Length: 281
Image (cartoon, rainbow, N blue to C red; front, side):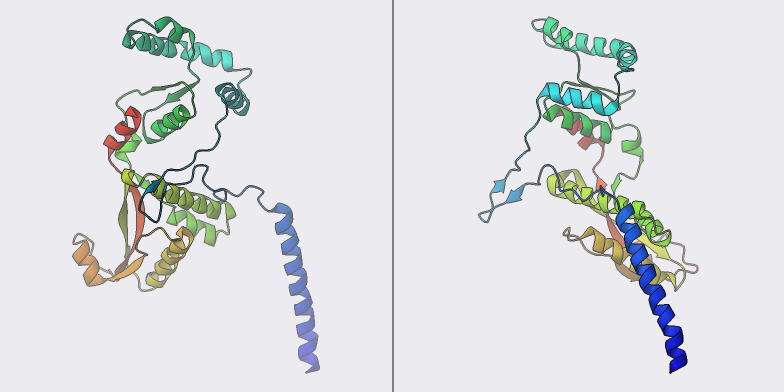
């Protein structure tokens, strides 16, 4: 009894010191701004008890001059703004001329004298979203595209709006908090996307083949943790498929050493016509 106390007491003291020291280190080095922890700036639309649509209330937008000053201040272009203006003067000049021709010449002079506030390079999903957001804030925006709208990455990628199961795996095994924060932020943005614009995307089931028996509980735990972080989004949670059911759903799977499959859900953007509709808005 005395021997066990002699070994347990130092172990207990060491555990207390380690826990206290770890707590102090976390408090000192804790992240001050966690990505994804802030609520949406514009709440999604809701439906009342009578079934009527309640539109969102937009926050107070700063005047145009203050927004331009904030953009210049955040980008630090005080010393390089002249070079940027020289580089883009030809593009913006041609765009102003195009606006003048389109307006019939009546207001062409005033439009040509007024410069653009923001130049968006690239007319894909990201560029179109940035341009639309800036226009709704009262800024004068010009967008240029080398080829056709949504003809690059927006048309050739998987177009998934997902939270990143691979990043979640790295966060767990590497004990990387930044990867975990990235997953949380992506899942939160996916939730905002679903609530604000459900007509621009659809749910996509993703199948993970399981070739070893020990991969089944490993993948199942990972996808369930992913579902837990995603919260309630009105979709079906991840589930396991046996070998026969996996082959029925996906006959071209390799049958050798196939144990089963795990299915989880991601969010997928609609085709490029949605981006073109966004640009026309």
